[in-house]
Image (cartoon, rainbow over all chains, first blue to last red; front, side, top):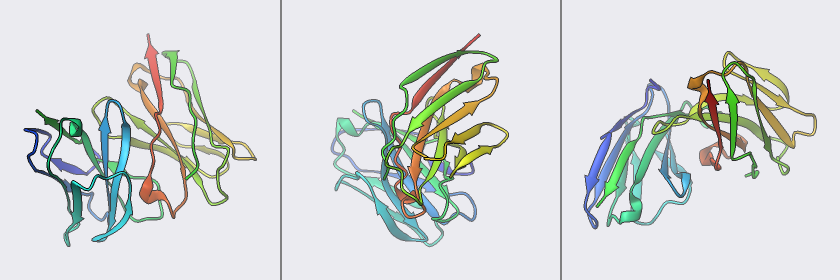
Length: 113
Length: 111
């Protein structure tokens, strides 16, 4: 158990819909990362937050957005969903920005039908 | 971010030592080398990190030559449960926010 909690574990939704994925980082971790993993794209970095502020952005689509709240939990919002958005979405957290040791959650498996 | 190159797959038998080499020719002076392990449908797990020479922990060893253009992750006496994808990442404290995972190396351990 990494200490990072992601909900829900599974999500099935229709194209065009909007979903919210939630992540609770390890206690004390200030940095949260979001990743997307699909079969044909591998593990893709989406976005990072540190203590409530966006710190780094990867290949995140404009239809996707995220935020980190004052209690440090984070949400990833996916809208206008397409079939190609079906993937495993991972959240990870780390103590700060100075280390590469991030702890990953078990992921949310999103299926768009 | 430094680009990394790893073998796509490696096979091994239980009890053998597995060595995975990662090439990172354009590694920067302040870059560290980090390895992660990922089992199917699970999030990656940090294994080890190093800057130069050799680093060892309870799971693996990381060998980094003087020129730092490559590194080798060594898994001693592997078991079936070591079957996983192993990722090599290179970056600095300025770039950890963009932990970029490549394709990784699929290691398959058989009895």
